[in-house]
Image (spheres, rainbow, N blue to C red):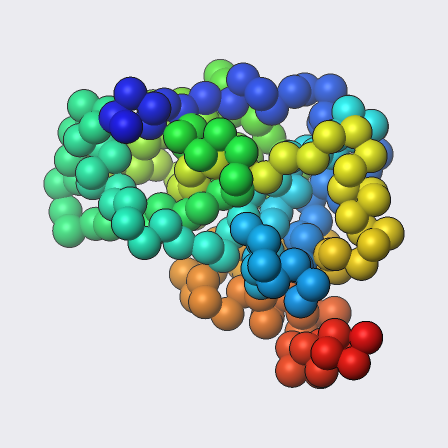
Length: 203
């Protein structure tokens, strides 16, 4: 598996970042109807969206069996000097061997893609080395894999009530309280999670 633990952002098509989008820089909140999928109670940050499709990172699912230090070892990168173990997130079911870092804009490299004034995405090994050595961004999420939609697919899923959407909030995205991001995202829309579940049960 070590050979598959690569990292790049080659598939983050610049065309996905062009023009206005109703979903880019928003959070997708999974509805209860997605309970049997990869996206059960997921919150996805939409990095890119256009007529060509969409790409996002799940921000509230941990990969329990993958450790940051083990990935560094597989990639032959230096181990963190301090007791430091960032959470490895499940970013989505597409290309799960590739790593991505959502992060604050205090860390920029040539291949960093700036999503808005506060959030970037970088997928090269350099940022993992910087994080391990304490030179990385102040706030970050490291994920393996991403969530992808083809042309018009996300729009169809929205029309079928698979997702709710809310403007992204930096504090919620980078919060270490991973277990409650779904509930907190719903509450930003004024929705109590328990009531949503009851409504879904009556449908």
